[in-house]
Image (cartoon, rainbow, N blue to C red; front, side):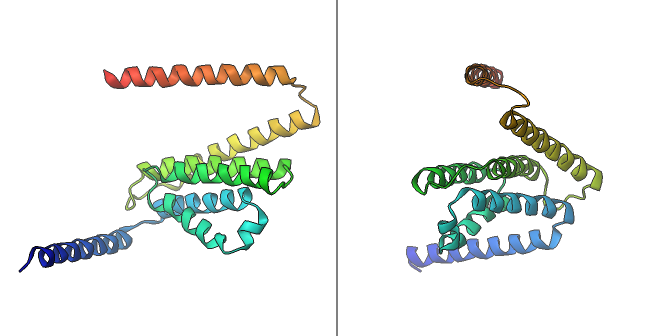
Length: 196
């Protein structure tokens, strides 16, 4: 038997092993982790549909966006969640600059909420094995906290927009610089702690 044929047999055997592993995973999956991964998928689809221009969504690219949204639901531990988030941001910039779509508060708030929900449910899905039995209170508590963050953020944004909370442009700049400083200090602290 030649080396090529031997390698072909190994590739075929490896593929068959992957198919068998996938079949066993599907057979053992429970409702809780599937619900979390379904939420990851739904929030990714929502974010992608809100971010991209209507013309792009109505064209043949919607199938590509749908396929992209399935990736973080299938593999929430890797870089796929970040890839989808960056794709959403790229779509938003594309829609508001090149396609000149207006920036509306409801769309921006819904997009931010969908991105936060994508991020937080992917974090939960990444630590939740697919065959775990999860108490409903755990999932409900997680989603209530996520909903509270989203509602408070939208309420603050609307209050600033309506002038209820007067915020000058200078304070936005100072808050942004302070936030970046805190993030950089936290990243440095985590890097130092990891080396220990």
